[in-house]
Image 1 (tube, rainbow, N blue to C red):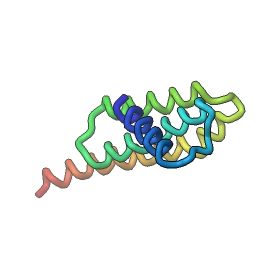
Image 2: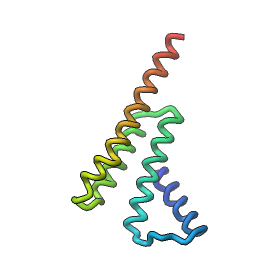
Image 3: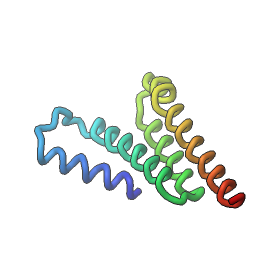
Length: 105
């Protein structure tokens, strides 16, 4: 995934520039995956999107969940996933509205 690679590159670059507090590779991957989610949302909001990009976002959410401890799943769903889905739905709706308004001009 391009966004995950960009996130990993960014984290590596920042790690070279600053002393990293987090050293656990699992935590670093979680940070990269969450950063990737934000990058995917940014890409969706600034460009033409397709179902593949929405699927990729869903796949990233599923992948993150699969790596979390069971006791952390509900926190992830309530504090991250619900907001990602809300933003995704808003982007989707705005795309539909943009298409509708362009046809009526």
